[in-house]
Length: 79
Image (cartoon, rainbow, N blue to C red; front, top):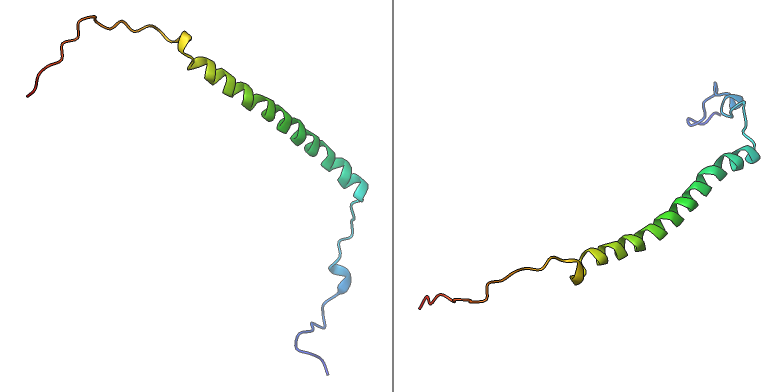
């Protein structure tokens, strides 16, 4: 007796692809993006501390302009 889950017209040879890719080809295709990712990661890791140093230089006190305040401060009396 045939189970209701089995499909009698199903051909098992159609399920598997007729072409196969070698693991050597896949490995050689994956090597380039992995190396580019590692180099990009190294560049970003060197760039971020430099950006931090430049931001400290911008906000350092000796680079800011001098503000001229008037000598006589008159505080208004609101009471």
